[in-house]
Image 1 (cartoon, rainbow, N blue to C red):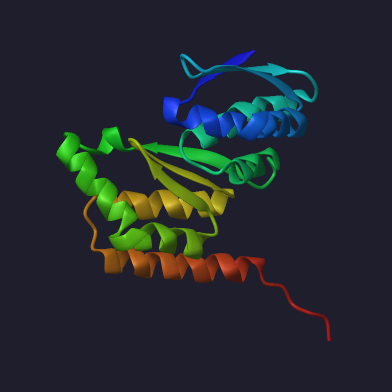
Image 2: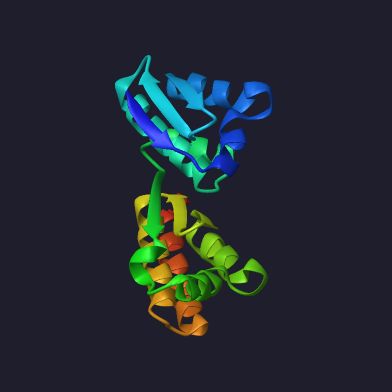
Length: 180
């Protein structure tokens, strides 16, 4: 059995209306979940495929870090998508620095975060002191680098250029020749 702690304001999202999300996670991940609404602790107990059960805590973590349940459940397709969390406190000096750097990653009206998603194909959220990303290995590598550039103070234009270049490379990798 594994335990995941979810922020209080996200417990309701894990449970869902009438327990719907909770049941869907249990069914798709083949686990049993026990949620303690007081503490935010979610116990994840294997009840089927052990490999899927190992990934189930990441689904809970993803919802806890701000992802929609449908996006979090995509992690169960473990051949393609995984969760990555970047702890912003490791890259900031104080609360003001944290807020400033979160603002750089989010961008004006959320545009920088949206561009990171569009150009990498990964899902990205900024919640609390973390940046969360769900995607394939190559997508996550590009997200990590772009976020790192922003945290290091790189101009947004340089980050956008990097993202466009990597987007083209990622798209070239998935293109294929159609037989004539």
